[in-house]
Length: 337
Image (cartoon, rainbow, N blue to C red; front, top):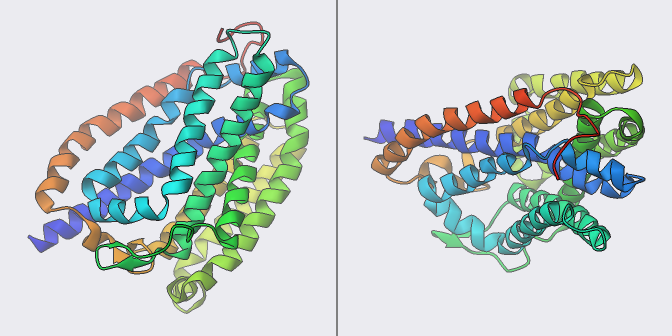
């Protein structure tokens, strides 16, 4: 059955990568909105900002559960190595997400303590985004494997490269949050976020450029994938598409468009994610653990795939329906209370 194992393992790698990507593009603007909370001038503006995501924010995190649970179920070896390597940033991220969720609910229930919960919402969003970026950077730079276990130290995840990716994700999520609010709100909030979106875009792109140059030097395989012929021929569409997305982002902001900047910013994240996938393939944990080696037995992959084929379209369906129902600009006089 080796061919079946090969096919199913790569199908599952695609499913998990898809779940993580959907989480990033959906929960990214949600976290970015929290990061931008200090830039709102009034409590009313903050209410409008939160109401723009109130119908969808908790559903966005479904994809994080799917990605993490899928990794545990179908790539147990990868899970057993990644978790000890990244315990600290992952635990802090989860605690920040929980604290942020509590703050989202409690800020509506009080007046006296509202500033405290506003700060908790902002801090939880920023810390969660930072930890996600640090975990990504630690994974990109490579995890030391000793046999079938993690072979590195407790603080291997904390490096200049991982810190840079963490800050980049915070800035990038803030950009997504700003462009989301441009699309979903009107009046003062929309104008303020449009003003913030341009400098955030510049900062984010500086980080993207710097990390893109830095990444190939983390592993010789990365360098060969991007800069050796014929690898450059196959990877060139990604930077070309990135240039197009950057043009659409700044053009949309300059011409007063509401939707174009958001979708262009999302495209930048998608292209960056594709770039990471190109660098990793066929590894699931660089530099040595491949997708095929980390996969569970074919019977487990097939069993889990049956349920996933049924559930993922359902999740996609209700997610799309929620965004469709709450499409368009929000009414500042109505919302979540």
